[in-house]
Length: 341
Image (cartoon, rainbow, N blue to C red):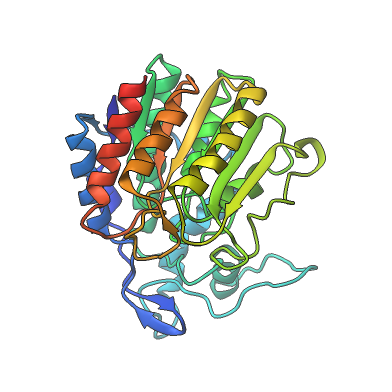
């Protein structure tokens, strides 16, 4: 099993993040990936550099104007008098009707959903390579590999079609699923990050060919707050093809595993040709974001359950923040997954 990653993915490094009204250091740091890579190597995965794909592969998920903003918006932003070298808008559209503006301040507000989506001079190069890692893992599985792991940084599951947020810019899991659809009539995305994958839900909300499932901390009391409720089940053709399984904040192994059992049954009923696993490790009991109380053994049990689905699987890294156990948690999950196959 391969781990796909490029050092280019460490270049995006915003300096500021708004937490409880205070500007603090940006928590989605390159150090996360160094620890995660150590975990992947401990699990005996083989490193592979991402292949280069045309950016047109992103367009099945993200509109062209959003990609243009990520690629070219920073240069325009820096022409503003006194501009800080990270795009962070002060105004955002909050209701309809609204119209797409031409000024960079307005476009920044349109495309950046929250204070975790700052754009730097390196952002486009970095997020593109993160998505290339996801595409490479999807291609490996499409070509016959049982599974592949994309060490995606920045993560992606909070990214909407044309909005960044929650440290996410391009939705790597959605891009991988869209790529897998070329060879499979149905694809499932299972998200076990402690945060709901609100961007992924939105992208596929009216589609029946991609089943989206998410086990996550209850959004009534946890980010992203407005999305991830059980009654959000899809719309139009996609009605019934979005399954949210919120669990109480700080839930431990038993609660998470019971929710995952429900997700596994729905996946089996859907009969997809392939699975994308949005793998967050931030439900761990020591994670600084304090959303879950899952143990390392709990992650191993979830890995065995997911492996037992028997589906070609693309594993996409989502959250999991700086603790001494981060790399070991990934190693434990990947090792349990591989042994269960």
